[in-house]
Amino acid sequence: MAFESWRMTRAELREILNKYEKAVEDDAYNLLQPSAAERELLGDDLLRRRAQAVKKARDQNRRFVEAVIEDLPDLCAGPDAVLVPERPVAEVRSLGAGVTTLPSSSYGSLASVCLHCLRDWSTNCEHVSRTTYGPAVAELKALLPEGGEVLVPGAGLGRLALDLAAEGYRVEANDASRIFLTVADFLLNRAPAAGLQLFPLAHVFSENWGHAQQYLEISVPGPRPEALAAASLGAKAGGPAITLVPGDFVKTYEVGGPGHRKFNAIVTCFFMDTPADVEELFRVLDNLLEVGGVWVNIGPLNWRKEARLKLCWEEVVAIWERKGYEFTCQKRADCDYHLPRGEKMYTVDDATNRLARAVQKLGPEDFPARELANMLYAWGISKFQNPKMMNQFLDNAARRAFAFDAQGMANAVYSLGVIGFKHENFLNAVSEEMQGRLREFKTQELANTVYALGKLKFRSDDLLGAICDYVPDRLPEFNAQELSNTVLALSQVGFKHDGFLTAAAEHIPRRLKEFNTQNIANTIYAMGALGVTDATHAPFVVAVSGYVATRLPELHKEKLVNNVLDSLKVLQRRMARKPGSLQPGEEEKEGRTRRPPPTSSQHAARLLSRHRGDAKRAPWMSK
Ligand SMILES: C[S@@+](CC[C@H](N)C(=O)[O-])C[C@H]1O[C@@H](n2cnc3c(N)ncnc32)[C@H](O)[C@@H]1O
Image 1 (spheres, rainbow, N blue to C red):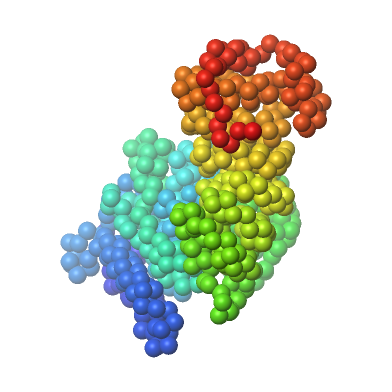
Image 2 (cartoon, rainbow, N blue to C red):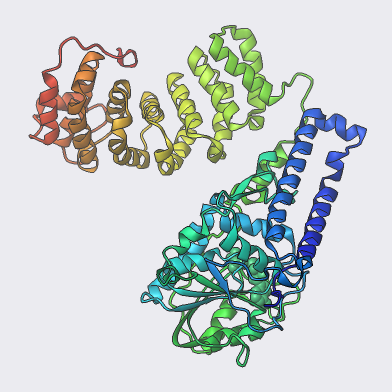
């Protein structure tokens, strides 16, 4: 059998590798060989780290490509060289010797392949499955539940094609780029079981937050293609899961083309805007579908310069309706391509704002924000007390709160909480700064900040409102201590927020097993103080009461039974009331005159009451 012309030869792939390395070296050149002034500015440490990262990525990416090169037939081995390898996952159907492929200027670079390795075959790109491939597969399943033959034009490295096969479709994956086809064939069929390491963004010198983003290391392929293929129809018949068909889509599948036949469905993903002649593309797609056939498309309308018709979506819809198709679904989807939102600077909404503000020049009396933050943190650890000096530094810090990172702000506020130093000016500045930057905070930083504000009895309704609006979606990320501290702190400053309270009342019962006894005591007390009422939060009260009964010995031992009982009593009394019938502060008075109805939580309270006696109040509850 002859050498498959759609594959690259070893020499061609080596040439592409050289081009890639040269381009990276050119972009990195001045970072690797800085002028004296540049060296002085960047400092030896950063420059050394950069050089190490460039080299490590270059060497590893070279090893990756060499593995693909090694997998290609060695033409110099003569006529006996093995020209067609094993293909257990993706067989290749080559439609004749004259397969038309793309010129090397189009989808012909290693850079593009690297990005697609990240997108399709790394576990870092779970977001692509969730936001792009998953919805496309789901749409097809809704319209073609009984399965069928599906064509995926412009299939790239084949992940979507394999996902479709795993759902029971017979899939033909077409692509016209020789390097994409070569790498897809290798990754799908013969990649080493341990995977290959790759630095897919090493060539991307723009919009990086730090070295860690640009020198992200991935293991390819992940997941393993054969694992996905195991669910396919091909696997059941003992054959490959998908068929790769090399060749220009239009030339291969147009009427009279070597690949032309009818399919039950076509799925295009980030492909519709690639050809220059979209009318021709649509004609070919249309002719491949029978009546009842389905076309699922997901991706942008990011037309190339050469595109004849740079259509908007409305025009795309009009054309297809004129061809006799009915749109069953048109949705907007937030599809980030290779990287999830936030990994690149331009995908964060307030990046420009932050960057513009970050260039403020320091005065002679100004400390760099990081040093200030470290110092404030050290005060907390050492319980430092020197009000005069602290006021000076904190006034300075207040003017430049914007320059603090999230960790710096959280540590500084936490420290002030620990030493009980309420510097209004600094706290106000942090409150204002934090509101627009909550996404930058880890849950521990959020919880510590709220906790410290609570301890300091510092109440900024704007900040607390923003936190309470923001936090519900992230509650599952909070650990028990963080959850407990947050509700306790809100109760300490008396900040009631219906949305937060409802989310917390729903979430906390599911996590109670993770709570220690102090967390339980604090949380029940705080939820009561925050206004848990009868109808809306009854499930919370019931769940918590029931759960407390299971932790009685511990609560008793820790001398927290009385606290918990008192708090539960407040909640249980409210369960006897109609929603909204209590006024703030009314609960104790009302509780004395009304008997709550029998409930399962009351049963728990009865159980609890046997354990009363020597319990003492936790310090935060002391009157
Ligand atoms: C933007 S990439 C998308 C790849 C894949 N569908 C995805 O979503 O990751 C476009 C793909 O279409 C392929 N392609 C471009 N023009 C083509 C053509 N005329 N015929 C077949 N494939 C083509 C490219 O090689 C590339 O793999």
